[in-house]
Length: 204
Image (cartoon, rainbow, N blue to C red; front, side, top):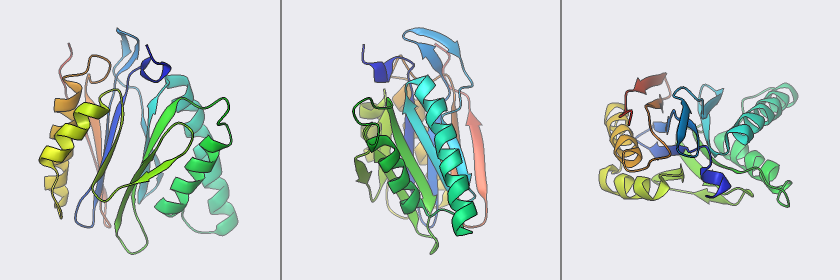
Protein backbone atom coordinates (compact mmCIF):
# COMPACT_ATOMS: atom_id res chain seq x y z
CA UNK A 1 0.00 0.00 0.00
CA UNK A 2 1.21 3.51 -0.88
CA UNK A 3 2.04 5.74 2.11
CA UNK A 4 -0.32 8.34 0.54
CA UNK A 5 -3.23 5.91 1.01
CA UNK A 6 -2.25 4.70 4.51
CA UNK A 7 -4.79 6.86 6.40
CA UNK A 8 -7.21 7.45 3.48
CA UNK A 9 -8.56 10.83 2.37
CA UNK A 10 -10.45 12.50 -0.45
CA UNK A 11 -10.63 16.24 -1.16
CA UNK A 12 -12.32 18.15 -4.00
CA UNK A 13 -12.60 21.86 -4.89
CA UNK A 14 -14.94 23.26 -7.54
CA UNK A 15 -15.57 26.66 -9.14
CA UNK A 16 -19.00 28.30 -9.44
CA UNK A 17 -20.34 31.71 -10.43
CA UNK A 18 -18.55 34.15 -8.06
CA UNK A 19 -18.29 31.32 -5.52
CA UNK A 20 -16.11 28.32 -4.84
CA UNK A 21 -16.59 25.04 -2.95
CA UNK A 22 -14.15 22.77 -1.14
CA UNK A 23 -15.14 19.45 0.41
CA UNK A 24 -13.51 16.45 2.05
CA UNK A 25 -14.44 13.17 3.68
CA UNK A 26 -14.05 12.79 7.48
CA UNK A 27 -12.51 9.33 7.87
CA UNK A 28 -9.20 8.70 9.61
CA UNK A 29 -8.08 5.10 9.32
CA UNK A 30 -5.06 2.85 9.50
CA UNK A 31 -5.27 0.97 6.21
CA UNK A 32 -8.64 -0.85 6.33
CA UNK A 33 -9.27 -0.11 10.05
CA UNK A 34 -11.39 3.01 10.67
CA UNK A 35 -10.18 4.89 13.77
CA UNK A 36 -12.38 8.01 13.74
CA UNK A 37 -15.02 9.81 11.66
CA UNK A 38 -14.23 13.44 12.53
CA UNK A 39 -10.70 14.02 11.20
CA UNK A 40 -10.18 17.60 9.97
CA UNK A 41 -8.72 17.83 6.46
CA UNK A 42 -9.94 21.31 5.42
CA UNK A 43 -8.49 24.41 7.06
CA UNK A 44 -9.40 28.10 6.93
CA UNK A 45 -6.77 30.75 6.09
CA UNK A 46 -9.14 33.74 5.97
CA UNK A 47 -12.77 34.50 5.08
CA UNK A 48 -12.09 34.01 1.36
CA UNK A 49 -9.52 31.22 1.38
CA UNK A 50 -9.55 27.55 2.44
CA UNK A 51 -7.30 24.60 1.71
CA UNK A 52 -7.58 20.84 2.09
CA UNK A 53 -4.85 18.25 2.70
CA UNK A 54 -5.20 14.65 1.51
CA UNK A 55 -2.53 12.14 2.49
CA UNK A 56 -0.71 10.90 5.58
CA UNK A 57 -2.54 12.03 8.73
CA UNK A 58 0.57 13.09 10.67
CA UNK A 59 1.79 15.25 7.77
CA UNK A 60 -1.68 16.80 7.38
CA UNK A 61 -1.47 18.02 10.99
CA UNK A 62 2.17 19.12 10.69
CA UNK A 63 1.60 21.06 7.48
CA UNK A 64 -1.62 22.70 8.66
CA UNK A 65 0.34 24.20 11.58
CA UNK A 66 3.15 25.28 9.24
CA UNK A 67 0.73 26.99 6.88
CA UNK A 68 -1.05 28.65 9.82
CA UNK A 69 2.30 30.04 11.02
CA UNK A 70 3.33 31.23 7.54
CA UNK A 71 -0.03 32.85 6.74
CA UNK A 72 -0.10 34.63 10.14
CA UNK A 73 3.47 35.90 9.56
CA UNK A 74 2.46 37.15 6.09
CA UNK A 75 -0.53 39.02 7.56
CA UNK A 76 1.66 40.62 10.28
CA UNK A 77 4.35 41.67 7.79
CA UNK A 78 2.18 42.77 4.87
CA UNK A 79 -0.85 44.00 6.86
CA UNK A 80 -3.24 42.39 4.35
CA UNK A 81 -4.87 39.04 3.75
CA UNK A 82 -3.23 36.37 1.62
CA UNK A 83 -4.56 36.09 -1.93
CA UNK A 84 -5.34 32.52 -3.07
CA UNK A 85 -2.65 32.52 -5.79
CA UNK A 86 -0.03 33.82 -3.34
CA UNK A 87 -1.00 31.12 -0.84
CA UNK A 88 -0.78 28.44 -3.55
CA UNK A 89 2.81 29.48 -4.32
CA UNK A 90 3.62 29.50 -0.60
CA UNK A 91 2.27 25.93 -0.33
CA UNK A 92 4.30 24.94 -3.40
CA UNK A 93 7.59 26.35 -2.07
CA UNK A 94 7.01 24.84 1.41
CA UNK A 95 6.62 21.38 -0.15
CA UNK A 96 9.44 21.80 -2.68
CA UNK A 97 12.03 22.73 -0.06
CA UNK A 98 11.45 19.26 1.47
CA UNK A 99 11.50 17.46 -1.90
CA UNK A 100 14.22 14.94 -0.94
CA UNK A 101 12.17 13.77 2.06
CA UNK A 102 8.72 15.05 1.18
CA UNK A 103 5.55 15.57 3.17
CA UNK A 104 3.16 12.86 1.98
CA UNK A 105 0.23 15.17 1.24
CA UNK A 106 -1.57 16.54 -1.80
CA UNK A 107 -2.92 20.03 -1.00
CA UNK A 108 -6.01 21.55 -2.64
CA UNK A 109 -6.50 25.35 -2.46
CA UNK A 110 -9.83 27.13 -3.01
CA UNK A 111 -10.75 30.78 -2.59
CA UNK A 112 -11.92 34.08 -4.05
CA UNK A 113 -9.38 36.70 -5.17
CA UNK A 114 -9.71 40.45 -4.53
CA UNK A 115 -11.92 40.84 -7.63
CA UNK A 116 -14.24 38.09 -6.36
CA UNK A 117 -13.11 35.62 -9.02
CA UNK A 118 -13.06 31.94 -7.95
CA UNK A 119 -9.66 30.22 -7.75
CA UNK A 120 -8.86 26.51 -7.35
CA UNK A 121 -5.59 24.62 -7.64
CA UNK A 122 -3.88 21.50 -6.35
CA UNK A 123 -0.27 20.40 -6.04
CA UNK A 124 1.52 17.07 -5.85
CA UNK A 125 3.63 16.07 -2.84
CA UNK A 126 6.68 18.10 -4.00
CA UNK A 127 4.72 21.25 -4.86
CA UNK A 128 4.06 21.10 -8.63
CA UNK A 129 0.99 23.34 -9.06
CA UNK A 130 -2.01 22.35 -11.17
CA UNK A 131 -4.22 25.39 -11.88
CA UNK A 132 -7.72 24.49 -13.11
CA UNK A 133 -10.64 26.31 -14.68
CA UNK A 134 -13.27 23.93 -13.31
CA UNK A 135 -12.30 21.60 -10.41
CA UNK A 136 -9.37 19.86 -8.72
CA UNK A 137 -9.29 16.59 -6.77
CA UNK A 138 -6.87 14.75 -4.48
CA UNK A 139 -6.71 11.62 -2.36
CA UNK A 140 -7.53 7.93 -2.56
CA UNK A 141 -10.83 8.44 -4.45
CA UNK A 142 -9.33 10.93 -6.93
CA UNK A 143 -10.07 8.81 -10.02
CA UNK A 144 -13.68 8.33 -8.93
CA UNK A 145 -13.91 12.07 -8.21
CA UNK A 146 -12.64 12.97 -11.69
CA UNK A 147 -15.43 10.91 -13.24
CA UNK A 148 -18.14 12.33 -10.96
CA UNK A 149 -16.95 15.95 -11.31
CA UNK A 150 -16.82 15.67 -15.11
CA UNK A 151 -20.45 14.50 -14.95
CA UNK A 152 -21.98 17.06 -12.53
CA UNK A 153 -19.92 20.22 -13.11
CA UNK A 154 -20.95 22.96 -15.50
CA UNK A 155 -20.06 26.63 -15.84
CA UNK A 156 -21.59 29.40 -13.69
CA UNK A 157 -23.17 27.25 -10.96
CA UNK A 158 -24.93 29.29 -8.26
CA UNK A 159 -23.88 28.61 -4.61
CA UNK A 160 -26.74 26.14 -3.90
CA UNK A 161 -26.23 24.35 -7.23
CA UNK A 162 -22.49 24.20 -6.53
CA UNK A 163 -23.17 22.68 -3.10
CA UNK A 164 -25.38 20.01 -4.67
CA UNK A 165 -22.81 19.26 -7.38
CA UNK A 166 -19.78 18.98 -5.08
CA UNK A 167 -21.74 16.97 -2.47
CA UNK A 168 -23.04 14.45 -5.02
CA UNK A 169 -19.58 14.15 -6.59
CA UNK A 170 -17.84 13.51 -3.26
CA UNK A 171 -20.43 11.18 -1.70
CA UNK A 172 -20.74 9.01 -4.80
CA UNK A 173 -16.95 8.89 -5.33
CA UNK A 174 -16.12 7.84 -1.75
CA UNK A 175 -18.88 5.20 -1.79
CA UNK A 176 -16.69 3.36 -4.29
CA UNK A 177 -13.49 3.77 -2.24
CA UNK A 178 -12.88 1.67 0.88
CA UNK A 179 -10.27 4.08 2.35
CA UNK A 180 -12.28 7.31 2.48
CA UNK A 181 -15.84 8.38 3.28
CA UNK A 182 -17.77 7.94 6.56
CA UNK A 183 -19.33 11.42 6.22
CA UNK A 184 -18.17 14.63 4.57
CA UNK A 185 -17.82 18.36 5.18
CA UNK A 186 -18.51 21.01 2.50
CA UNK A 187 -17.57 24.70 2.57
CA UNK A 188 -19.09 27.14 0.04
CA UNK A 189 -17.20 30.46 -0.12
CA UNK A 190 -19.13 33.49 -1.50
CA UNK A 191 -18.19 37.21 -1.31
CA UNK A 192 -20.79 37.69 1.45
CA UNK A 193 -20.53 34.54 3.57
CA UNK A 194 -19.15 31.05 4.12
CA UNK A 195 -21.64 28.18 4.18
CA UNK A 196 -20.41 25.05 5.98
CA UNK A 197 -22.44 21.85 5.97
CA UNK A 198 -21.65 18.41 7.38
CA UNK A 199 -23.00 15.50 5.35
CA UNK A 200 -23.91 12.05 6.58
CA UNK A 201 -22.40 9.29 4.42
CA UNK A 202 -22.51 5.51 4.34
CA UNK A 203 -20.84 4.02 7.41
CA UNK A 204 -19.78 0.70 5.85
